[in-house]
Each structure stands twice: as C-alpha cells, then as structure tokens.
Amino acid sequence: MSEWIVRQKIRIPFRYTAGRAMSRFLMGLAERRIWATRCEGCGRVYVPPLGFCGRCWREIAEWQELPDEGELVSYTVRPVGPPVILGLIRLEGADTHLVHRLGEVEPAELGRVIRVRAVWREDRTGSILDIAYFAPVRSGSLG
Amino acid sequence: MRRVAIIGAAQTRFEARKASLAYNELVYGVVRELLDRTGISMREIESMVTASQDAYDGKTISGMAINEVVGAYLKSEAKVAADGLQALLYGVARILSGEFDLTLVVAHCKESEGQSSAITSLMFDPFVQRPLGLDELTAAALQARCYCRKRRITSEDMALVAVKAHRQALKNPYAQRAGEFTVEDVLASPLLADPIHELEAAPRSDGACALLLASEERARRLVDRPVCIAGIGNCTDAYWTERDLAEARALQEAARRAYTMAGISDPAREIDVVEISARYAHEELMAIEALGLHASPVELIARDRASFITPSGGPLCGNPPTVSGLVRAVEAYWQLSGEAGARQVEGARVALAHGAGGICGQNQTVVILRRE
Image 1 (tube, rainbow over the protein chains, first blue to last red):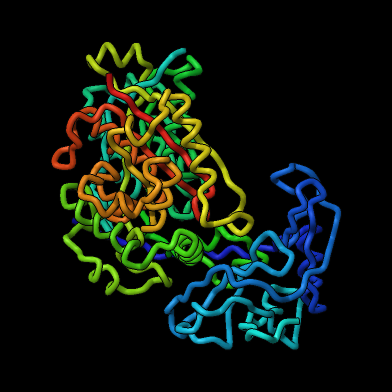
Image 2: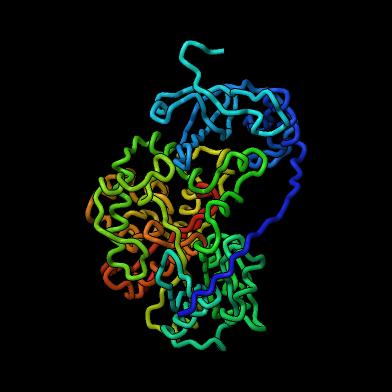
C-alpha cells in the first residue's frame, strides 16, 4: 500500500481590523485602563467591549472603565513545556469573561484563589499582552 | 406536511491516521458502501449536502474537492462548514422544499493531516484570545471546571463517563479506542489540560460517514417501516466568554424545539436510545441534563442500564470534528433499522442524535428519529 506524503506549510499574513470598540479597548490597555461597554437595553457590561448587544440586538454607545481586578471563575493548566496557566476572569462590574494567563501562583494553589489582579507590563503597545498576567489578590488586601 | 426518512447509512472505521487514503478516496469509500447497502444507484440521487472544514482539509472550498466522489457532477451540491448534523438539517430542508427527493449527506475529516491545536486556535478572537495560546482543548477545560464546580461533580464522576464510553465502544467495530478501563486508569492517563485527561477527550481521528435521505413516499416504496425524521431543533448561544459556561442553554432550546416537533413531552420515557456528541467527558453530562434525560447525570451514568446513552461510545472513542454529529445520526438510524450489531438497544423505536459545534458548544442540533 502506497503512503506517499507531501509536506507543506500554509502561511498567510493577516492585518485584522480591530474595529471601533476593540480599538478603544486595546488603546486603553496601553494606558493601563480597561474599557467596557454597557448595553442600555439589558444592562450587561461587556469586556472586552462590544459595539452591539446580541441579546437585545441594538447598538451600544455607553462606555465605562472597569478596575483591573476581579473574580477567577475558572482555570486550566496546560503541561506543555513550562506549564501555562490560563484563567477565566470576571472583572469587577463585568458580565462577561476575560481570558488571561495567571502568574505568581503554583498550579497546586489555584483551587484556593478567588480574586485576581492584573500585573501590567512596563512596555505597553496596545495589546492584550500589555497585561503580563493576573496574580492572586491575597485576602484583606482589596482595593 | 411532507416528511423525510433516512433510507441508508454508512461510516468508515475511525483511526488515528489513515495514511493510505486521500480524503476524496476516504469519501468515495463511504459513499460506495452506502450505495451497496441500500441498492440505490448514483443516477437516482438528485442532490448532495456535504460537511467539511477548509482548515482541516488544508484547502479552501473543500466541498469542491469531493464533488465527483459524492456524485455531484452536474447536480446540486452545497457544503456546510459546521458540524455534520447541520448538513442533515439542510438535506431535510431540500427534500421538504419539494425540489429534490433522494439526497445524500456526507461528512469527512482527516484530523491527522494538519495540526489540530493550530487549526482550532483559528476559531478564537484574534485580538484578545488567540495571543494567549487558546485552542479548543483549553476552552473545554475552562468550561469543564465551571460545570463541575457548579454541579459539584468530582474528577471520579467525570472519569466514569470515559469508563462507560470505552466499555460501550468494545461493541462498536468502527470505534478507534475502546477498552475496560477503571476510574483509576482514566485519572492516571496524561492530564491534557487540567481537569481533562487523555481518556476524557476525543482522540485525534480520521474518518467519514454518509446518510441517504428520501421523501416519506419514496421511502415507503423501498421499506415497510421507514425511519422518519420526527423532529429537528437547532440553536445558537452567545460567544463562549459572554455566557455562563456551566449552562447549556442552546442545547436546552434545541431539544425543546425538536421535542415539540416530534410530540415528545417526557423525553426520559419516550426516547429509547440517545447518541450524544461529547468531545469531552463533561459535555456528555451537560447534554444528559440539558436534553431532560435525567436531573442527575452522574447517577444515570453510574447505573448499568444507562447503556441506551451513546451505545457507540461516542466521539470519546474516536470521531473527528464535523463528522461527530452526523455519525450520531448514522448510529441512531442503525439502532432503529436493527443494524447496530452488538450495541443494539432491543426494540428501539425512538432515537435522538445530538450534534454540537463552535467553542464550548455554541451551536447545538437535536434530531429525533422514529420508526413506525
């Protein structure tokens, strides 16, 4: 039986347009600010911000700034090379989730982590990676 | 109203790598087997709906690369780049329109040819999610923890789903992975993305399946007691980071629509066999609950008589994406036509096939089949 294999790599450079809402969010990150939108119909606060609410099917025009701290809703550890820990984070005041890396924490301690706060990079460029990772907030050190 | 019946089905054996078959050869093989099983000739088939993904085939307009082997030369063919059970939905719509009668529905995927993680990462938002290295498995792991926390499901409970699936797959000659595993074996298999272990995730898989649809009148000329499509429901949820991942709202709604259409009021009593498209163990539990089959899915799985839930073993035992949903309909159909071999649920008259697509099951399809 013949098993001739042809190897190729597909490389397609892209220039994704971030759009109005996402541009404001990404540019805000460069200034250590987290911008969200709030639907005037259902009151849901979207972060990353959406310019439209799919549930109400209407445009969103209201912007608000959120703190860089919130609840760790879920997490996972990918044991690829040095383990990568990813968390699902609900920022204070948000109704949606932000995904990000978790740091300053050992995988075994994750089950006890309730709140996390962004640790910002010094060299920010308007990218989600302007936040280096989220770190656990030790109890009693709110704010 | 016009009704649609399934008059034949075929599937390939699922394998980690079918290195000797190009994907058009894989598809030809399964269509050839379908025609041999039904005795229908390609001349009689009027329309085709195929399901495939450009990114997995490494080629855009992937439907056109298989048009000859599905018999679409100078006929009408349409491709669905989504779960294969949606291709069935469109096949049914074609017949209900009155324009076509015999319609072929085919799904294929060779997951082994590309890099699955790189391919599934393309599903994610390129601005705030892809740079973090997300892929389907990572998102599934985040969902698994949300669901297990909310419903107080332990690692042992989750492992039980994998134990049951692989035990049932021992009776399925098309399954890629089967065996008598214990809960300890499952929890000792490599952790892919905490809390998901290797035996709790669909393995990389190559394969294809096909179904032949006909109007009810046509089906009655061929078989005495046709298997008809009694209900269909399809529903889309919000993007995965914009909803409660512990809930399967879209599946509840898809099921409600399918049950209403099929006149089913008590699914746990009225449905004899269920094929769930769970690519990860927690999805099986979420689906049992959302489909209204049992309020405590773990309790149901732990019982021996739960063999009517995914008797094939399901995607945990090897079905690639895209094919996962349609092969559930193949299995459900065989249960009702009495062709399910050793995994046959005795006397099955009503079957449910479930398909899901998108990140963390954003799109859900439920199909109810009934034999007279």
